[in-house]
Length: 307
Image 1 (cartoon, rainbow, N blue to C red):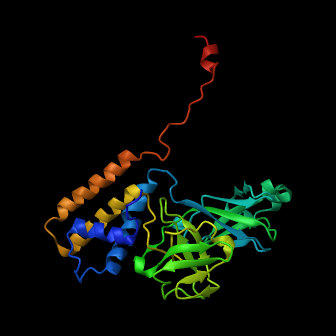
Image 2: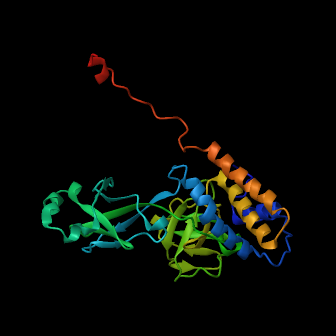
Image 3: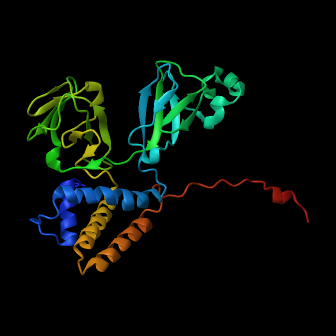
């Protein structure tokens, strides 16, 4: 994949080429175009990807439990929904919890006897929280599985390009300096520079900052490498979509720009967008291309039925 630009700089150039917007067009600043891109990512591209049912956006987040039974659903969970919930055992293996209806908490205690063993612990969702039922034990690891909304798009100048890392001390060095928006009181994230553009870490507040470095907990940045980016938590200078969807996003934004200008080529751009969406659907019907093996019973019931 060398030589391809997956950053917002590359996205902006692609959009401007498609919409034929001059580089010095003052009406459409980079910030405004990226705001259009965020909108189109949510309105057009993410639904296109999700309809393939390939679980591209599924990730997980861990929380250490307390005696409380209520825990916030992750802030970036798509549609405020959860795929699954688990408790990690002593070896780090996830043990899925049983989902029950939220009115279980006001029902008689018929479920409680199941909770004497881990497999009996349940959860339910109410409002913006998940609840463990019927109780919670302190010091365990609660894992939420959910579809994560891609981070807000920002210019590369608002992020730090990683040039080196010290996994022993947690010091991350950035080319051109650390953005002024990052401080020891602002949580940050690190975004992988290669497909699929996952987060190396998130919601980490630097313990120190210099002109070119930030320091985070070493355990949180073991996978960060040169070429990655650091940014404010919830932001990204890299488009966190499958590579094949980047051009669809660029075309969708180009349509919006032409629409706002009342351009005579709008209908052509709209047709190209629909063609790009259809091509994506046809090229990626499922994430795993080979169909699963089908198992047939050797002796079917029909073989023993006589007319």
